[in-house]
Length: 387
Image 1 (cartoon, rainbow, N blue to C red):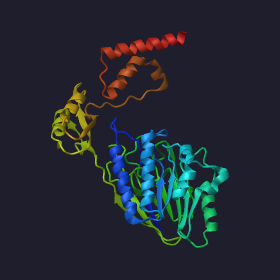
Image 2 (image 1 turned 45 degrees about the vertical axis):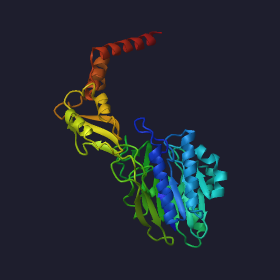
Image 3 (image 1 turned 135 degrees about the horizontal axis):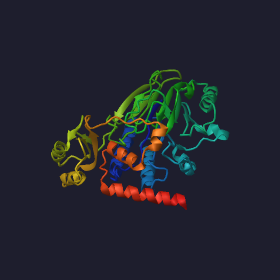
Image 4 (image 1 turned 180 degrees about the horizontal axis):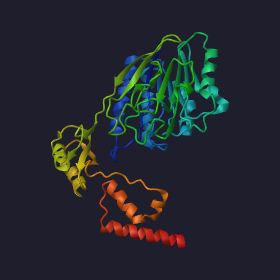
């Protein structure tokens, strides 16, 4: 059984208000060509098809056309698409009936009374247990193991069993994700690997953007990662996974196929930071004909010049690159140790002093105009309390 495992397309994503539909279209064309070349038995898309629960009509059309093209590249292939935490689960199921005519299964929700609908059988090839994203509070207890046990009873031919899910698994590498920790990534609490049940041959995961095998999964538990980067911090190759499975119990054979991004995300300098004057020279020297998104990393002792953003935009005029953002880093000698206060000490602080300290910590000038605006806002809040 051969599988194309992918996830986290995030169609409709924009980068600093730049439209990315051209890159997304290029990615989808590469996937279609890959399917045509590999002729897999299963195409598995493990969540976060869209970047928002309410994608535009144009973005939904982009996905629909891509899915039809992928089907036509290998008409005998089964396609399974599950919803992720960025998707609307109910929207995924609206057109599930007509999609079946193309052997496409779109699964958006978990209904404890219809658990069997999460099992997709590929006759003579294997079984897919396709579980969409479910908030942990709404996940039926023991669902995954119940589904695995149900497949085990039906699997008389000892065919391979694939479990798919969109979640965080403990021990994964969440590099590139904001507000992430060992226990929570992207607002999804981590499951220990043991909680995912037993009896699968391959656990196909979505949600984490870095392609990887999960430690402790015995080469059976894998995030395919996103085929296109969503942020500058995802500074690693982006790909889809080709998975080949023999009989039930055999270790999967996996290889990565890298996806080319026609507009790469570039950070200048590639390592460390530079003072503004050196950073602007580096930006000015960036090749005119190279299509890319640009982030500058700038070291500041005090504050970034007020005209820096406008100057950066001027420097890329006539170039094919797109300037996005200046990321500032205060030098070590300017960084002061955070003040730890007790509750009583906090209550004695004046609001304007706390605001000024916060502004200093993030490198924002707290000038007389901002001080006056803060005072007016504080007075308005006090007046509202008196009404």
